Amino acid sequence: MDQPAISDYGFISDCRSGALVGRDGSIDWWCPDRFDGPSVFARLLDPEAGYFRLAPVAAGTPGHRVERAYRPDTLVLRTVHHTPQGSVAVTDALAAELGARAHDLGMNSPAVLIRVVEGLSGRVRMALDFAPRPEDGLLTPYLHERPGGVLATAGPVDLMLRAGDLPLRAGRDRVTHEFEVSAGDVVGLDVAYAGAYHDPPARLDPVATLAETVRAWEGYREAHQYGGRYPELVRHSATVLTGLTYARSGAVAAALTTSLPERLGGDRNYDYRYSWLRDFSMTMRALWVAACPSEASRLFAWVTRSIGRIGDDPVPVLFGLEGERDLTEHDRPHLRGFGGDGPVRMGNDAWRQRQLDVPGEVISAVWRLRDYLGETFDDELREMVLGLTEQVASTWHLPDRGMWETREVERHYLSSKVFCWVTMDRAVKLADRLGDRADPGRWTVVRDEICDEVLREGWNDRIGAFTGSYGSAELDASALLLPMLHFLPADDPRMRSTIEMVERELGSESGLVRRWTTDPAGFLLCSFWLVECLVMTGERRRAEELFERVLPYANDVGLFSEQIDLKDGTPLGNTPQALSHIGLINAAWRLTNPDSF
Image (cartoon, rainbow, N blue to C red):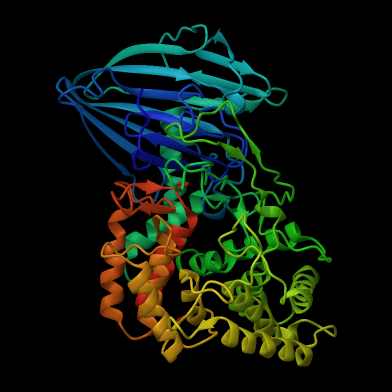
């Protein structure tokens, strides 16, 4: 089987984990226990690393055509295969717990993959190919025929494949079977996961559970209303964000996948299945706009618990979905990588970096939701804000790795210094909620000192713009954050000049904006930042045009990756990418209410 493109994949989720479903009917990525756990299907990263294909025998031959769409306001994906012999629909979902509604979605997901086949017309012969490879493709399971299905066992994993009345037979390392469906026929299949030494895999009726899962997603979205512009797009992006949320903790995974290349033929392949504190403020904005305060509250609780008491060491920029700190990165040399582009990495060593923007992202979110959090903060929230503020007060003058997480030398990055200013500025404004240890007088002095330095060292007279780091002539799209963070108004002459320079030098006719001049791809979040800046300068019509030029870079089911190849429009990087969908939500709200943030 050929390697599908990134854009060929749809995303399904149970808010515990997620899976990728290709247009060819193959599920090529599923880490059933949790988003950042080991996979059982990883054909996405190696042809031999496991998959579950279910499609017409005629798939890929002349006359075969595919249509697909999500059930409205859900991550339940329906794919219709049209063949010369007839048409058949395959609906894929990760099962919700029976009776789950609204904020219960994902709390006790049973880790069951559901596939329901429905004959629409004619008579279509279907092919099933089930080849699990647990532990990221390291293990080939034993297959045991059991009443009603086949049990796959290897290492810490049990997977039970059931297919109703179909007479499945276990091969040496896979299950293959062909069957026919006529108009009106319905065949339910499921794959249930369990740990080897835990309770056995759940047993569900796949057809009834599919209907229950649709109701769970619909109930969730009904509880979360959005009244701004582009409502269908915003609701869908909010659903994707919900699907990337690990419900038990409230942490939002940056993406579903690891090691999808940012540059074909390069080595910028990283694991994004964790939750980044840097994205915190933007995530909170998007959740507040398109979801509700309950998600924001759970996310705050996760952050305070994950950080713990703050000492001298820098606060990590990312954590595991249950707050794990040590995310030591290691290569998986047995996996060839997407399209042969390795390396494949598990873990992410960015957790070791000093990134001075992190406290500002967190405290900015606290300030944004201060009224919801109450006049008096609880002890843990108060300790976190105080600890982050004092850490920035003593370290803001140091160089760091910057928000793009460079693995080169540390520098004095503009965006990092501005977020240090944000930390001190918001802490001063929050001082009356922080108890006797708050020191707004001293914090004000530090804030103003940072501001003076940024205006002096971050501005480059020669090119007429704020640049990526002190003393550099290199433009960086992160400078677009300055007006959004209220460091400078968008109509300040220096800021207007910077926005114009970024648009001219880093932008493109396609609407895509690069992070810096040598960046080979457009970074979708930066395009949405530019939309916001144009709104803030009063150029609303141009902002709308830019927003709508970027929208077609989503795939046919509305999913954005991280980046887009400027030459051919190919999606690059991990997918679906939370920040891209967050950028869409926030830009749509800015177009709705220019002064809302």
